[in-house]
Amino acid sequence: MTLFDINPSAVAQVGRGELPFDEPGGAPVLARVAGNTLQATTDPARVAEAEHVVIVVGTPVDEHLNPEPQAVPKAVAAVAEHLRDGQLLILRSTLYPGVTAMVEKLVAGLGKDVDVAFCPERIAEGKAMTELFELPQIVAARTERAMERSAKLFRTLTSQIVPLAPEEAELAKLFTNTWRYIRFAIANQLYMIANDFGLDFERIRGAMAHDYPRAADLPGAGFAAGPCLLKDTMQLAAFNNNNFTLGHAAMMVNEGLPLYVVHRMEQRFDLGAMTVGILGMGFKAGSDDPRDSLSYKLKRILRFKAAEVLTTDPHVRSDVELVPLEEVLARADLLVIGTPHPAYAELEPRQPVVDIWDLYGKGVAV
Ligand SMILES: NC(=O)c1ccc[n+]([C@@H]2O[C@H](COP(=O)([O-])OP(=O)(O)OC[C@H]3O[C@@H](n4cnc5c(N)ncnc54)[C@H](O)[C@@H]3O)[C@@H](O)[C@H]2O)c1
Image (cartoon, rainbow, N blue to C red; front, side, top):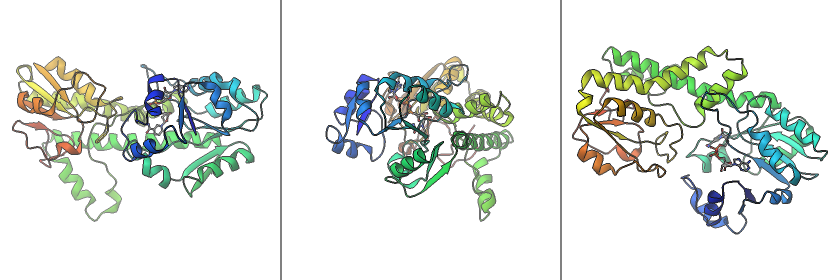
């Protein structure tokens, strides 16, 4: 297997057998295969050697929340001269609806006999090494041959193949992330309602779910962030001509939560005279990925309001402003849990902690 990537430092790192990011269970596997059965390269010509070409480039929205439907077609176009008859091209990025058809058209225009399929990645970061083998795989293609070839390839990972039409699969992936994002928003809004009335959301949620399965799937409150949920909700909104009331409402609730938290903190503390420490900058517990983490929005707001803001994280490596946990615990007057990393669960800080995640089970956070 060959990994082709335009990022030379990531390629060099993978070539040395080092993961560029944390993924539990991934490091020993990479160490075993790197340089043996797995080659990493920046040379696009190597694409010609593959029978199956899997494309999984990023498909973010821009700073104005617009999708970039050309991201995947551009990546295909960049290697088009190296595609050859008999290959199966699998799109695995989360796609703006209609992009599979765009790529099919692009490939047809090359005059090469290349099959195209869309088989979305559905793993969650941090669970890849188990979910890759446990999750059913959605497989979508226009032709019987592309369907059969894709199903055969993914049967090496999982026993369950779920066939769909490409347009159905594009929506299935966006609906999945949007559904999750809206569920977090409902929890966050209910949390704010309870909190505003001085009531303990976690206690209420626990009572709701107690031997009552119809309420058991209400998530806890917390910063719903990261590189997928918001951007895929916004891709769906753009696809539906900006008509997505629930999706936009979910964004306002989830993206508004750091502002709500700081507003509540201002009511209780003299923030302007305090050093505030944020524990956790990754976008979710246990993750080293700071992309689109709401801890950074929290930091920006607190920088404006507090005397000083200190940030720490045991996993994130890419942030030069992080300081050691001990320094934050020693210097901060007030702590906020940005990310409920397991490492924080055992702490017994001397200062007040704003804990919307209820990591410490102490009820009303602020
Ligand atoms: N990260 C996840 O856990 C996850 C889960 C499910 C779905 N997805 C989807 O998978 C896709 C990729 O996500 P990601 O988080 O890995 O993105 P990423 O931006 O972290 O990684 C994409 C990689 O593609 C490389 N790249 C960009 N353009 C390229 C090109 N033209 N040719 C070759 N390589 C190129 C980049 O250098 C980078 O290494 C997105 O559509 C995302 O929504 C991601």
